[in-house]
Length: 301
Length: 166
Image (cartoon, rainbow over all chains, first blue to last red):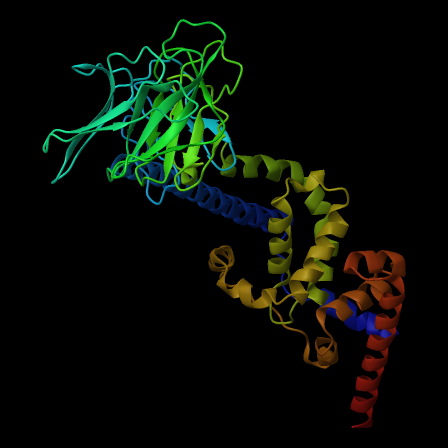
């Protein structure tokens, strides 16, 4: 054991000691240099992250500008009048409002992307309450290579049983779609499907055809096959309306119809409704039935 | 205050503390470290790493902390990294003329033990520290420290016996 202690002591004495001051000073120098390197790395990493985020933001805005999908960018909806999306299940209704409310027709979930509310909503073609020469309201127009269609209601349609008329300006053929059974007839608002084969219209199911009658006026969506003029009533929900017109707007892919009316005092259904083409009913979205809403693709939710 | 300025201030605070620890640390590092390296390099690296967490004076037990760091550095292959360290090269350049002594040739059997065993023997045999403290310094359980110490001693005896027989 004594030998071992001597050996260890001998080893412990090896080398020329630099001294505490020099060793400590050198250690501080090394530590300071490493800290500088760490700070530089953090600075560079922070810069890279910030630059990456900026690039992503720019690309997102450019993508949105390219596709018109501005509803995915919060606060960027003030001039949204041409929101387009690909592979959509629902299309927008547009307005010169700075609030765009996005609703999922399947779940009813809603998101408001901008809360500024000017509440002025102007439908696209045709205007919701556009007068029609020789009639009362223009429901919608459709033009392609072979036809030039107008759908409209007669001037006398303040009375029950008001029919809807489809006129082909090109051929001069005029066809009448009778008021669906159990309704008071057609009111204003609606439109042709994107391919012109169908017409969405609104029929009054309770109360008078015109506004101003207390007690609740209700309308129901009607899908009309243009070729045969067969009208199919879409089941609940019926929209309450305060004017003698509502709105019904097709999705770009022609698979959905959004409809509703202004019913400030309405109690049921106080929602914008959406109908999936090919089915016989509709669902209410969690959107109040004003004119300041827009519905866009489920994919942007 | 920049990093260099902070370092200068810390040097003043740590100076007297480190001076009181240095001799013992150097002896310890000389035993634990690789035979062909300067013990001061090992101490310097251990201190530099300790300074990452603040001045030495803020450590609860700076002596124990640095001993533990020295053992870990010696055990974890720090030897190779040392040769690439810029600070070491700078220091080596400033120390031109100093010769680092390797183990004396008649103590070669000690070099055959690993760093942790040398540390264990030095702390128990020379510094006569209790095994509980040694175990804490080396990061092992007390029974393991005793067992390892016993094995290291047996190995040394065997080596010495063989040498005497030859």
